[in-house]
Amino acid sequence: MPEHGYQAPRLTMLFFWCVALAALGLTAFGSVQGFSPVPYWDMWDGQLAFYLNLREAGLAAWWDQHNEHRILLTRLFFFTDLHWLNGSGWLLILVNHLLAVSAAILFIGALRSALSESRDRLLGPALAPLLFAWLLLWTQHENLLWGFQIQFFLAQLLPALALFLLYRSSYSSPINITFIAACGAGVAALGTMANGVVALPLMALLAIVTRQGVFRTAILVALAIIGPIAYFYGFNAVESHGSLSSALGDNPIRLVRYVFLYLGSPFFYLAGGGTQGSYLATAAGAFMVAATAFTGIRFLLGPRRLTIEAAMLTFVVFIVGTAVATAGGRVTFGLEQALSSRYTTPALIGWAALLVAHARTLVMLPAAARATLLAAAAVLAVAIVIHQLQALDPEGHQAFERDAAALPLALQIHDPERTQRVYPDSKTALDLARRARDAGVTVFAEPPLRDAPQLLEKAEELGPVSNCLAFLDSYQALPFEPSFAYITGWVHAPDLRRTPQTLQILDSRGKAVGIGITGRYRPDVAETIGPDARHTGFSGYIEVSALTDDLTVQGIGTTRCRGPLPGMHTQKAH
Image (cartoon, rainbow, N blue to C red; front, top):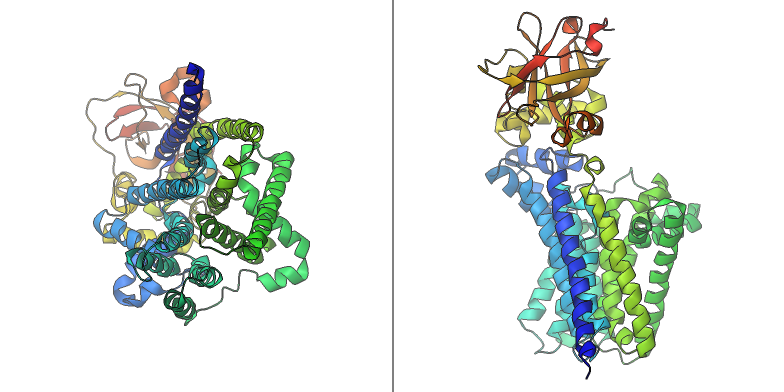
């Protein structure tokens, strides 16, 4: 065989694995850059309040509802993070990424099972790294960067694992370790999200259709009955969400459009969004439903064996059902919500399963068709890398906004406009922040937020310091705290080529009158001072009475500097 006959598979594999590694590296970089330990949205109730109330609530708190979900497994990680790591948050983000990688490994394993007898040396081998890159797509950055979303990954991963293990167990004796593990994964799915309830019934249905034997089928049917009963015992419906029946009755076309957008959402992002992206996502979602229905009918008309294709197709049905259930409860919030970043995770996993379910057929196509598919896979790989570059965008993350929203909570300043960026009820957030500080957990028990009230009361004695360049851009009166104003600006220590993390503001007498934290992306300052001044923007709070005074800013912590703070405060504050 000519030399190029050997080189083509090697070069193809090199290209696709480089794409996979690039996807992994860019996702890791973006997650480090966008990380914030500040509790965000549902974490205040689902994690922090759960932990702080656990002693009084007892064991029942572990199984209590969070909205319509019972997030038992995620609460195990929440407890670990708060009890042993003081709520640092990094463990939760790490688990998110490990679960995403685990999903990639699972589907690559399923792909290898599907292609175990294939002799194709180009298309088949290229699909494994493509799956890896696909399942680490940055479209799901909300889930990757939000510690609460462990349950979102588990809610898709555990049913997929259960179905895969059920397939693997079919080669052995009626009851074996693999079958027990499959049942265990199905039961564990009950402790993830509401859609996890469907895992056991789908497993039982698959066992019945593929004639898995009386004993196996009886066990799965029993679990499929007991599991939902246990889940819905004492269940309270969430009135703020819509229902599938009402959505079908009110506007079924809108419901179908939501489902298609949900399932095709990754392609919306790969196409760059906009109207064109919406059309592509809708078409992709419709294709997934049509392909699943067509293949499912063929399967039911065939020999009905428990193959890897049957297991993966059943999982695609699970994802489509998840999309329909989500549409029933969320379509009232608008079609745009179907394109939320967090919803792309189940869509990505659904497409991975659909690919595995058809992989054997694809590699058996004529050579010309396989070459076309390989070219399409290469185009998709390039699109993935291009999209992953968004992980490098310092403006694409909300880390600073979350950190800034935590400052008024640490100071116990009632500022709903900022607080609502991390939790809708500012009064509840103030109370939970105080309790977290007293309990010694989360950012409120760590510097700089732990020390924020003291920094607002007493000026720090820093000794010899470098020079600070600073400017106060704006101030805003607070309707619920008339003695304080919200301020923004920038600060930098050019001699040290660093920006202080925390800053203290002093009046002309050297009295502490304000405090701020830095981290906002300021390309305008970087253009003037240098690239090390890219994140010099700050926000904070100052006593209104000091706004007409001559102010000084000083950096606290490892970057110590001091200098005048000119700007908007030279005008009379209102």
